[in-house]
Image (cartoon, rainbow, N blue to C red):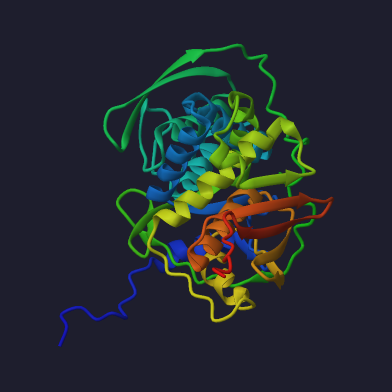
Amino acid sequence: MPLVEDNIDTHDEHLTGTFWTTFSLQKSGAIIDDNSNTWVIFHEDEFNMLIYHYESIISSPIGRILHNSAADSLELINTDLATIRRKLFGKKRLNKILIDAWKLCGWGVNNFHDSTIKTNVFASVAAGFYLSTIELLENSRYKLEWSQKSSLVINFNRLPANNEMPSPNFLKSIPWAYLNDSQSSIIDSDVKLESQELGWSIEGRTSFLLPCDFFNRVIFNSSGLVKQFPQNILERWDLVGFNKLYSNGLIAMLEASKAVFLSNDNFVYLRDEGDWSKTIAKHMTYFGYAAPVFTNQEQSSTYFEMNLSPSLPLSLGKLVGLWERAHGKTAKCLIVLSSQSVKLEISPLLTFVLEDSN
């Protein structure tokens, strides 16, 4: 008889309940809050790997871009909280709200008046979240210097900055950046959170919640860094209807998201070419990825359609990874953007012609 039974449930019922009361999972696959901000759940190792692949693809370090994108995305999300500070005991109440929010998102438990935080989140991203949080608390702009004391501890030095610095702008030029309609039906989630000394985990893997706006800002802010992709990347992605302002960053995020999925040992099995709905539900539902719809199969090409969603780059990249794992072939993708959706054709990058030996 085993010492530990396989059906023991280690999740934190209170934490899980609070999480899925604060955030809701839509039938479309999106995780949203009450203000229609969209989020994705990432395992720590996979998020670190995504950054590694993204930097490798664009051949440029993006630490400062990660920092600024994180700070701007959280500042927009927390805009409505600024009114709390002006009320009686407002700063104390706001501080508690922000501490609870960090804990709920899995970013760590911190006293923002200290110059040190403990977090599982990648340092430059955590520093961006910290900067936005402390600026909201103090109603003042800062320049931030940070250094990692260890893999979990980050030290900060705040310097005064120009208080006239404007608030970040919405990414209006990116057509999928924000939800057009958040009234989709809500479904129950099977994701259960397990409390850790720092943050939380899912099935034993350290994880956290990140805003989709952060990823889209990284795409937009880093596109100009790319001079030319290697041919082996360019030939895999054919974008139609996308603006060149962000297309290079989009290709890099698609490629990085695919690489992260292919780096794990998830097994993908299709009973037949039309069996995509179960495969998509297993691998893409519950974590904030947009749910694509299988539309057609013609010879070696598979066709999908997906509504515009803030998680679109991550979702498309993961879907192509699913296809490559299922078929054992490198994919070539045609992605066509319309006003409400994208259509995706996936086919093998290489085709083989059998010649008659006679």
